[in-house]
Length: 101
Image: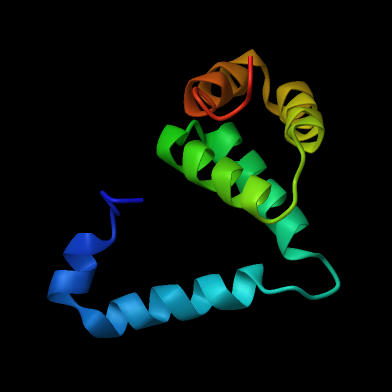
C-alpha cells in the first residue's frame, strides 16, 4: 500500500513499528490455521468494524495467499449473518476493483 497508515510511526518511532510488525508477523504466520485463513478472519473483523481500507488490503492479501473469490464471498456471508447488512456495504466498498464483476 503506497499510503501506508504506519508511515508516520516509521518516521517517528522505529521501536513501536518493530513491535507492530513483530506482532503482525506472529499473528499471520502459518500454524494450525493457515495464513490464508488467518487473513480471511482478519478481513471479517475489518468488515464487522467497517474499516474499508483494511477490507481492501486484507482481501488483496488473502487472494495473494491463495484465497479464492468464492472463499471471500463465503466469508462475507458469515459476516453479513453475524453483523448485518451494514458490514456488507462496507465490504462492497472495500472490494471495489478487487473482485471481478
